Length: 325
Image (cartoon, rainbow, N blue to C red; front, side, top):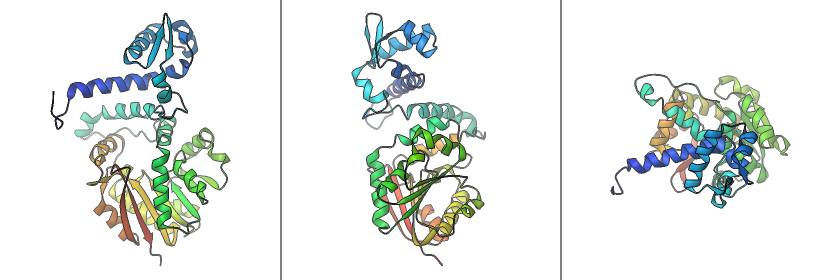
């Protein structure tokens, strides 16, 4: 047996193949179709699927304990219901299709290492990406929001940049703030109905691209108490982040709060591996150090910079106050 510090190739390979199997089965609608007992012919009709493929996948899932078989009929196993049926307390189905997309991108790493540019995948699959973002645990979101409001107790208006499915925007609204969720047009079109955001009072959905300098002209100058940037900075290069943070400063009232949630390199144990994901999926993305964030914020006129660990040390929340003119 390998020591704790050694990498177990066999175990990792076995885990990877099982994840791909589970992700493929979920994406194909197999678990949902098996909420009630079905035989293979019924499943074939329900999913417009291949009979041979269904048999092989179902038997493999049975061997792993995620599907039960009774004579010639199959049903999702009890332990799998909370994992793969939407609404389950341990639901992971929202993130699995996105995992498959990530895996596809990582398979191009040999060419990328030699200088090839990654295929632009944003938004490669809006549905998969949004459901993966929406799978963030409510407790994590609550901790982040509470930390923001502890620093800006008098906040009334918040801008959620690139907020996708609205997990954070919803949480701010639930605390009594008015929120604007700003994201790409195709994202807003999807989340407005899929996640019911268009029906939330005090939440405005706004379409645009915050990587464009002109995006600030869509808002009144100095109109927000908080600008929240969750999982954004890792997508972009140093120069792009500098530009974005300077633009955010224009939208904050004097004493307003910028809040950046991300992996901080040198502080989060997952930062280096997550940077590989950015290498596979973006032109200039990476994970950035605390020193870099502090430099960008000071250049943009921010002070009182604080960095705290969230979810153990897996993620960090960087907050700073805008000095104004």
